[in-house]
Length: 194
Image 1: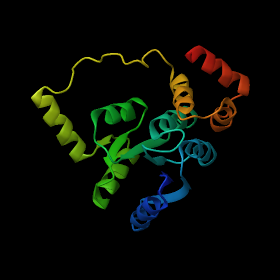
Image 2 (image 1 turned 180 degrees about the horizontal axis):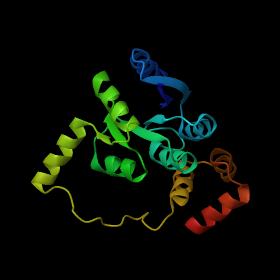
Image 3 (image 1 turned 120 degrees about the horizontal axis):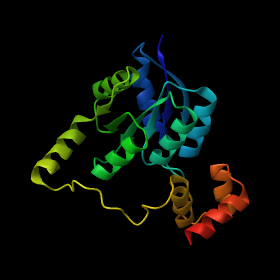
Image 4 (image 1 turned 90 degrees about the vertical axis):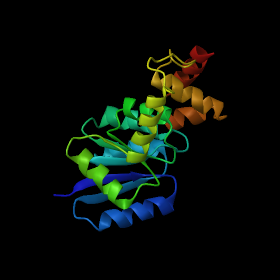
């Protein structure tokens, strides 16, 4: 029985390319698509995919935030993050959000299938380019071994979401609709953030 996959990327051409790759193998079946984080969450709740292939850079709710929300509602779903960038902050944030794999968009179709197969069997996957980059930085001593709290350290994930949307110029009403919250709830978040 093939594993069900939800594709989430804001570029249709990328989704079409991934569909072409996955249609060549009997291991995976695409059951839906989304082009932003909010839709990824709602489609995941509806379809309950085995795997979500999630772009990290999405409009509105980004891939990290969407991963957290998808896994909150669908804990048995496994998320594979796709990214253009191999910076350690993105990698760490992806795995902290619950993702099971981190794959660069410049990876080969074989790497994509390896990641999906590994994750579908309960494993984790880190793109070789990313692991090589991180290993080099660790060996050079470029990475801190202890975490230093950032300015957003004390905020909950939802507060960070609201703050990011406020920074993008969204109104309280826009935020309420995007996140499925009441208008007064959003106003309370904004007041707390101030």
